[in-house]
Length: 247
Ligand code: SAH
Image (cartoon, rainbow, N blue to C red; front, side, top):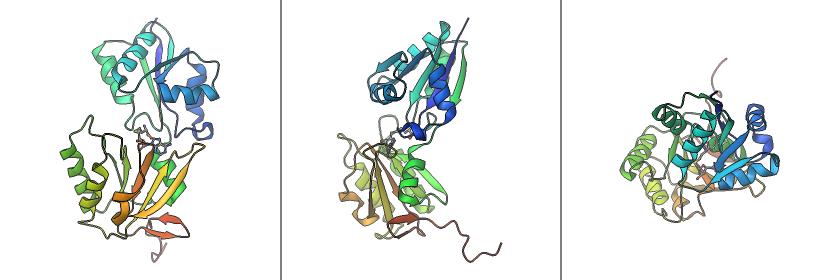
């Protein structure tokens, strides 16, 4: 009999930020499949599980193997950090399961995405319309990415940048900042959170004008305020618009 594949977003990293549903899905699984660094994180919280870890860039192999294990009757949890449906594995799992005619049951368990966990560290920067943009050009052309940055800038969205910088992509963050400076003041608040919800969590407040020179890597989420966002007592706040309104 075919088993079940649960696609689990386990949040930013700490067990307290996992949903109960995510905890139960991992506890119930016969096999937990994921990227090596994530598996190492989860081993701390669930030491007795059977894990299958694969390296970065092995996403297709990892999903195929999880689908095959589920098709053979196992209960499998395939894990991503944050929300699995946001730059995670969920879409690929559905696509491959159809292609492989796997006939398995698939469940998607949402998680706390990096934009949310980072926002909670910074204050309340996502209180108004927000665009999530990944600066990784592995799957999307850099022209399209920058076009989206431009559109979000023009429309005054708060912007949460995922994958803001890696060793091989050091220029894109500065390019994105230059595009946004066409629409926003150099004083626009920017918050950078590294390792949100993990033991080495840190945050930096800077401005759009200085973003190019900020210390950013792939463990960071960069939150760029809209035209209304301000900083007070070290907190980045985007007004929702309550003040001055009668309720
Ligand atoms: N599915 C994940 C995103 C994966 S893309 C989610 O929903 O959160 C990987 C990017 O997410 C990283 O480059 C970084 O920008 C962001 N990210 C993931 N975990 C993070 C954390 N704990 N703190 C800050 N940013 C994080």
